[in-house]
Length: 371
Image 1: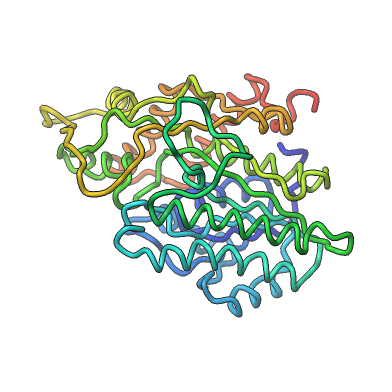
Image 2: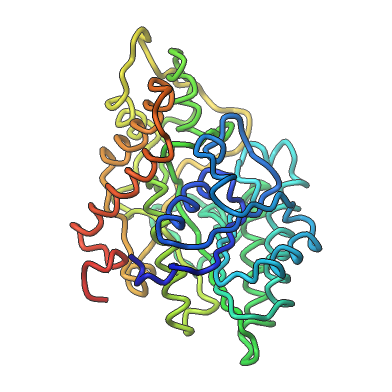
């Protein structure tokens, strides 16, 4: 996979204790990478990082990306070949409660990673993960392209739009120069789901937290539409981009959307129905109650145009919504209903199943087809 580019390489994952960071860590380990993590702690209880005992499978630095000296010390010690920057405050509702902390982590944290790499100035490929919320979402019916306007109405969107501007500044001011040994790209992913997410105020974790203990869940904005994708789909895109950035210097400074085809956007209600079909309910008569959201602004419609990733990287999603739901529900079902299950092994099994499906469906990063 990925032309074995990560085999034996030193890869630093910031935000490694989070949902996406934990999945990325498992995938990198399976690819033979020497994985290092940087995070300011474990974000939830339970947490996938703890459930999979990842602390003892990698070299982990408990540091805050808001502390430049701490970030520099880690980058100087590790001397990574690749950096995947995921550390962030990722929740829209939390950004309303604590906007300053959100802005600090998401903007300064971004700058600190780039500054540490700039000062080190050794060969390094950096994939900066922001969000589809980085766009100024006016809820039009076509998908946002990488050249569309950034920013948004809520503090979270503002922080992600600003992070993109920081990345652009570092590229043009430093990494574009002939003497720079650093290459950087940014990625804007759609809403990811999958087993192991326990973030507060997020749709899928809220459902399985309640269903796992036999309770129904209250859901706001059932008709809101999002570019849902399984976490493995997005991470496959990130890893493909990291590989291509290493092999193709002309990608330095580019930005990419990662999400499903625009016609495959689904509503909250449609996603929940798919998840329900793969869960065994013992005593709940109605697992979902829909409630009206009046507490804060949240976009009803968001679409991404991912043509650039398809054209430049030959990347696309390959799972149907039913397959996405089955993999997600199965992970949580084993966690809540099978206490003796080896969740690390289960996660690796799901990765293997996904990569086999991807090879069957001619995903180029599987190396099953000509590049």
